[in-house]
Length: 92
Length: 148
Image (cartoon, rainbow over all chains, first blue to last red; front, side):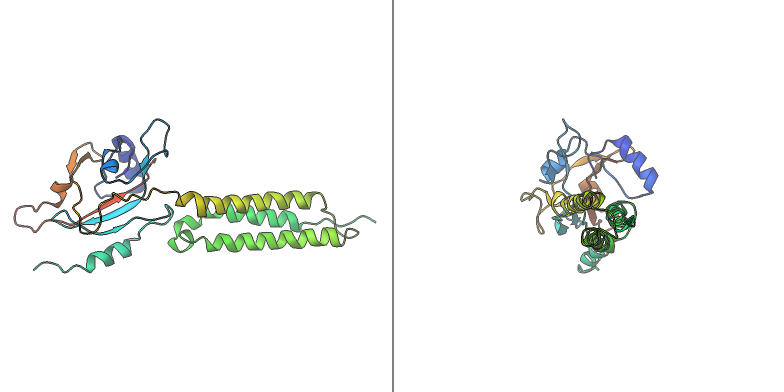
């Protein structure tokens, strides 16, 4: 998700070809609820943008792994997310 | 006797400039050169080396080489480029909130509803919920800075 409005998100997905569910949080409601808001970034007069983060949530809604980077250039790589996921036994 | 042109300071400046630009037009493509900008640091080192050699010979052998005016100017510009790059990549990108209240491992992820790219409301608990006959899904929440 990002704080971009639905239309911007749709245009961006069409451009880059991402097919996963992408949510729009233009009011930054979820960012506030998750304490992942960075105020003072983005356009003036807006709440701010996300401090980048990745949270892996299991089917019960429990966070099982997360990455809160301390440098927005450096994000969790797909391999590290998959490695975290693989550490959990698949239910039989 | 006319002294020779001294291209080294200009070459050094150009290499420093390339070191800056290449991060955003080339090295951003590869995690190995993006996360730690070592390739840019190497370019800066090469650029400053050329510059230093150019300044050295301009001042050490002024009868042979020119560049006692342009050299220091290019030197200051090059150092400014390098310092700006270091500020952007080492300081600017680390100014992030602590986010002490973010859900921790073992805690519940608060439920929410947001529109997807088609404007359809999507609920987190709905993504996790088991469809009939399945076990439910894991969900990876990715918070992007956006502004696309």
